[in-house]
Amino acid sequence: MSTAAAAIRVGVGGWTYEPWRDNFFPAGLPHSRELEYASRRLTAIEVNGTYYRTQSPKSFAKWRDETPDGFVFSVKASRYATNQKVLADAGDSVRRFVDSGIAELGAKLRTGGSLKDVATSPQGPSTCKTMLDSLSPAAQ
Image (spheres, one colour):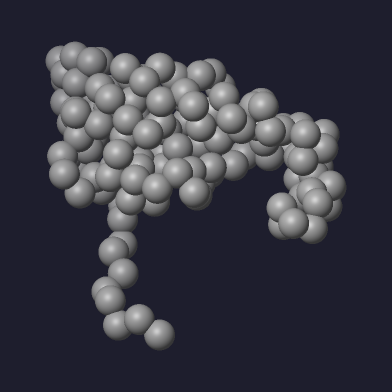
């Protein structure tokens, strides 16, 4: 058993919410600075936008640069990868998601920069157990 101390992170899912303006976010804060502001009050944020659409490497790099050292992102896997009727058929969707530029987050990726566990926040349909059962034993 390791004796290394575990870090406890405090975060939220996303950072662009109208109801947060003028209460969590100060009045008059430009929308373009909301991530910067939130990342100095929290230690982690889940990127929800990656579930709904492909982001660009430029966006990932911008988010990395707007946040302080030690801050981490948990990247939600694309719905095209997680909402397959047969999860084992999601290979192309997973590849597109991984190749979308998430590596630009570097050490700020939840896994410390490793892509091995990048789908850290899958959001599957109610048939998720059936999907998991569809995987080959080698993939499980």
